[in-house]
Amino acid sequence: MKVIERTVSNAFGRWMHRRDWRGVCIVLPRICVVLYWTLPGVPVAVTTKRHELKHVDQAERYGFLGFWKRYLTQLWKNGYYLNELELEAQDAETEIRHLRSVS
Ligand SMILES: [Zn+2]
Image (cartoon, rainbow, N blue to C red; front, top):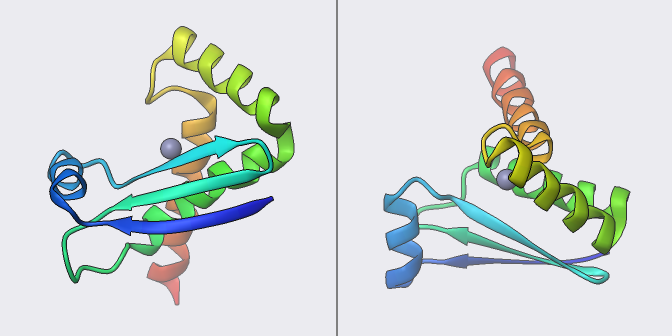
């Protein structure tokens, strides 16, 4: 799986950031494009990076079609925040926070 990560701090990236959206993982066949919505000069939080890269893990686990079938089914049934793939990504963020707080 090829992964391309880019920060976006243009007007749209700042607009997304102000609305508490920190990134998106666009799963395509054999490639994931991860965009991080940032403010200029502000580094991407490790928790955000971990969240989006968990979606890359999921894309590798389920494949392109399997990922989208699961993601969209979950979105339809449970919405965004209770989507099992989002919950797993949030758990990955929590693990990072815990590791950082005990080190
Ligand atoms: Zn997510």
